[in-house]
Picture 1 (tube, rainbow, N blue to C red):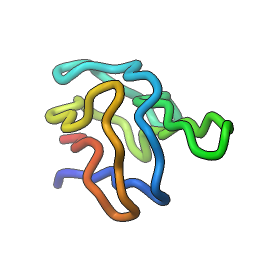
Picture 2 (cartoon, rainbow, N blue to C red; picture 1 turned 180 degrees about the vertical axis):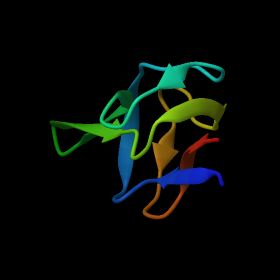
Picture 3 (tube, rainbow, N blue to C red; picture 1 turned 60 degrees about the horizontal axis):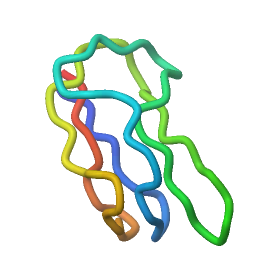
Picture 4 (cartoon, one colour; picture 1 turned 90 degrees about the horizontal axis):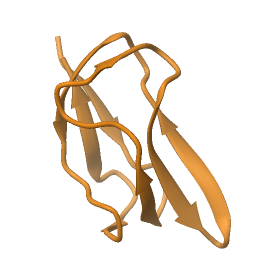
Length: 71
């Protein structure tokens, strides 16, 4: 079953750390968001392969937006 990673707040995508196809472990940083001058890491919630990454550096995400899918 695929695990969807969604934004928890409105933020800018400051840095993309992982790429589609990467093998990730629970707790690995996928993306770093920036909001109110704070850096917020978006972490993998499960082990698996990053099957889809739908954000790019500089994007703005809204609360609930899809960031990545781990399959």
